Length: 252
Image (cartoon, rainbow, N blue to C red):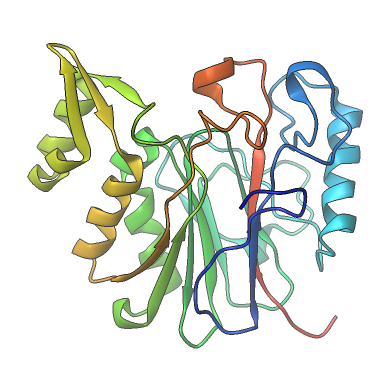
């Protein structure tokens, strides 16, 4: 369950693979950002966000500064090694690495964080997959970028908005079923113009079509669990972001 120590994936990976999603607890932000907001783009106090990021590194004993991204709902994936300590965060929605102690990170507040690794435990990635990113192909792009074989790939679906709370319009529904007819099972119609969307199911469908069957997670709802999670859909623009991080443990 979610707690101040974050949410650890429940997946059978080698010990080299370290990963978690933070909760909104255990930080310094106040008001609607309370308390561990890790995003610099949501009009929270910048100095407090930096304190929260330092707290994250200290509390979770991270081996290095996370590689923060400027997320744009794209299908762009970077090699995290190329962007350690950049002056400006790279524009991308996923990163991967095969190097020890390089921390890949994405920020979310309803969008789906998708973690990747392999059975050998020598490659990891994490993607920011909201509905726009999922439609644009960020899940497939992330998998292909790692070079992991489908038979060796393991995926964990982190905290995102649940199927009972994610209502979308006809445009989103039509876009997904036009892309892949099988996506229809991830939607439940509520009236003439609205559907409930299961973003976890959309991810599973895409992963399975890539030949990936070791898929874990997908049981959270950021919208309904206000105690532990930020939610853009619930709270609007004046809210924070959780971080999803993954790295390969090695000699420091």
